[in-house]
Length: 220
Image (cartoon, rainbow, N blue to C red; front, top):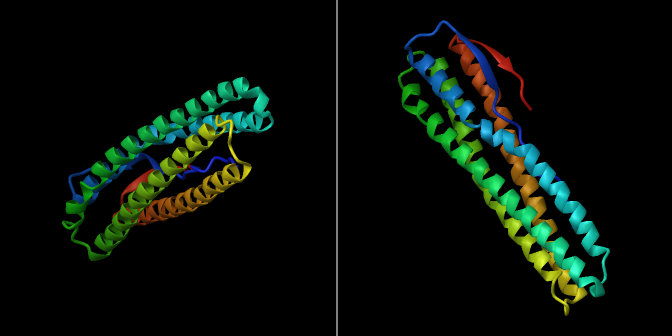
């Protein structure tokens, strides 16, 4: 079974300072965009914990497959730890989604304000930025669903290790299912990252066109 940290996520760009505040639609949009960034902080914080849990599970998996059926008691102990690790990741992913959902709710408040922008060039840049972010949120929905499916398959795999009459063919078939699902997760993660990078660039372009002066923290 292949193990690697598949949720290697690029984050939306952080902004330090807004110069020339006012009540224009552009400034109000800025406020919603950067509030959305702040709401994703917990989403970003989960990444290190998820990586650690994946590495922990990888080590447990290696130990389990080196044991024979006569060492069932030790297999049961290691399997319980692996399943607990999977459940830990499930909780982290749940927290991620809550953070993204809150960010999306805040971000979508900018849509009506975009329609109020008078300069057509600025409005078009804002619309392009908005569409990219919506696609990013949709991509995360796919990523979240696929990752959770992979966790379910992993848990099923560890339960198979507890079957004393487990056939080698059955085990290999399930490992292949896990690996195929990992590939889906990797592809979904790439799509999410691509839209994140696109959104970051379009947001910068919008700020420049709207003459909103900011200082960025580059954040990968």
